[in-house]
Image 1 (tube, rainbow, N blue to C red):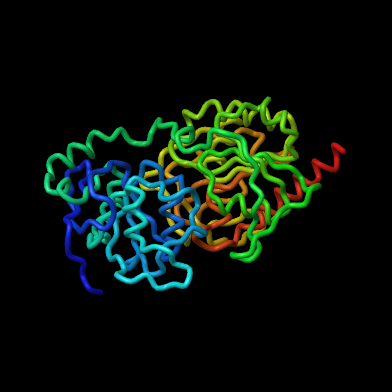
Image 2: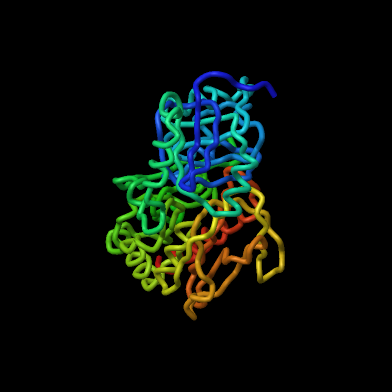
Length: 383
């Protein structure tokens, strides 16, 4: 691999650690929580995932950018993370689907990114000491190490941060495109069950899969009340992924509790899973360095099967705090943390990882079919 040369880049951690590199995105300075993602593919889906809001992501893959970027693979409107750290950035974007090189894509969006970093040392440090506040800098901002360390130490962290309202849409809209085979679009029929999806930072491929499984989808802001959702006449409610700490998102917890009590089918993913558990009486905890990758093994307790999953979260539900109304359905084989729950008497369930992957395996996609069946059954029963 040929090395890049040019504008200086730097990553400073709150503990004083310094990692030097070369700027490959926008210049300037950005702060956030530094995490690492072990996925080997799907860098654009990672970069555009709203769940990475206020995070600086280190990709452990040694070589990134070879297929460029395109509009179809975006999970939101452009890059969503605070910064990106790479070992090697491809000089060539070689794919018939590519419309723009990764570096240009990041620069256009104002995202600071650096390459030529010793990501192995950085990942080892994060595993040993936990996710840290950091400052990534490119250009002249990278020349002042002390200022970058001070900026990293000033970052308040994600604990106690309600970021869902920052990334959520502010209006109600209809989502009508579904993904059939990765490229073709499908639309729901007029009589399909109606799902109201909360946007806490939702990924587009989640919405595509809801439609592909036969649902009509209405997308609503994170702060939408239960009464406003019920006024839309849903047959099911979907709770999306998103960034930040779930504990302070009290408005969503109140709405979720009321919707569960109303008897509606509910399906939550990632932050939505955590909010559902909190709404019903559980607690959440901050993980040391989180789960970020596309190769995480999860055991499905009912069958004993091991599912390979995509993961992106820094908080988890404390299994010991679950109320009697929830039972555990999935656990992580990496660290035993809770990965899925279901209600003991209602059509309500959730999953911590990402069944839609993007990137990653789709072993858990059948959860979408389960939710679609629940919504269709609710629709039939009320007609």
